[in-house]
Amino acid sequence: MLKTNLRKIIVGSLLLLTVLVAINYSVLNRLYRVVTLFDKENIVGNFLDMKDFLNYSTVKASSQPYRFATETKDIPVSFAFRGENLDTEDFFRDNRTTGILVLKSGDIVYERYFLGHSESNRHISWSVAKSFVSALFGIAMEEGSIKSVDDLVTDYVPELKNTGYDGIIIKDVLQMATGVGFNEDYGDFFSDINRFGRTIALGASLDDFSASLKKHSDPGQKLHYVSINTQVLGMILTRATGMSLTDYLQEKLWEPLGMEHDAYWITDNQGMELALGGLNATMRDYAKFGQLFANGGVWQGRQIIPQDWYTASVTPDAPHIMPDRRNTGRSTDFGYGYQWWIPGQSDDEFMARGVYNQFIYIDPDAEVVIVNNSANHLYNDRSHHWEEKHISLFRSIVLSLEGSQTISTPALRQQAN
View 1 (cartoon, rainbow, N blue to C red):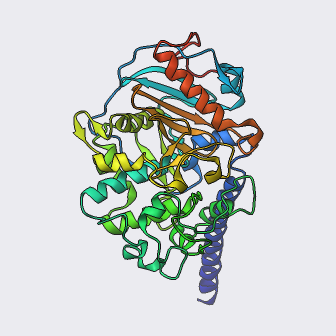
View 2 (cartoon, one colour; view 1 turned 45 degrees about the vertical axis):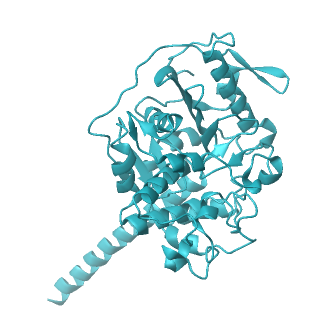
């Protein structure tokens, strides 16, 4: 009997040890993948396969998928930037573009994939996801789940009392003007945004991390880009609607827009979505979202995004969020709306923009939407002026489609080197 019990104890202990080793290996592997996420040799594969090493929830493809018509055109062989002409193909290579898709009047006119990306691959959006969260926020406002952008954050998320978000109104969160302290430098290993990434890798709560931030300056005075602001918007949405971000996205956008493919949203161990940048989708489905906003929030004759929310989202309405280099502290002069960027010297352009050069660029008057995915390991070298070059390329494409520029770059060529 004693030997039998001892054998059971030994076997049980070995099983427990095996489980613990497996769990720790999973966590350590996830931490390693996150820490090396942007390394040159890993970045492309990681951006296309985030769900291989992180938790996620699934957004199912629409039961009635919508497929764009295709009318093949070309884009400029070169584009002007600061007094010189840049070769478009060289720019794609240097920027490590993984995909680019252009819509004109709701049709696909140009579509290319590089470096293993494809029509059915889901690519990480990074901060492009912020614009999706903003759209969901507008729908929740229209439905009455959220009363006003002038409400306090803590009216909906009381656990953020006595944090950097105490006393902050929702509008300042939407416009990145909370005054909450946060270092968003992806090139700094010890920055808040990279510390946040390691928090995800270790399985800690995104809500708890959001509650750890402190106030740095007065709200409503300065555009200071703090990604955790969008995480807080996600917290508000889940509390106000009683639904996860995944389920709300499924019901309010993915199904009615006829999204062709499943998407997935990175989550923490508690199932909370990485609202600030964890959405992964195909370029064609990103393009549908862009087309929705190119149409003023209307899809197939139905007003999906409330008209007043659409207008407020893409209209800077205060001096501190106007396009101005002094507002951003960067070499570009983007203004800001409700989680949308507005380029300087723009008539009506606006864009969703994510780190490492992810874009949904929209020019409503020209009826042009451009989706751009990249895995640019040199992104943090600001001497390249990546974002300004992208704007120049996008504007050149718009001009070419309006017949104002010579075009000859081959269209719809997939899996280029």
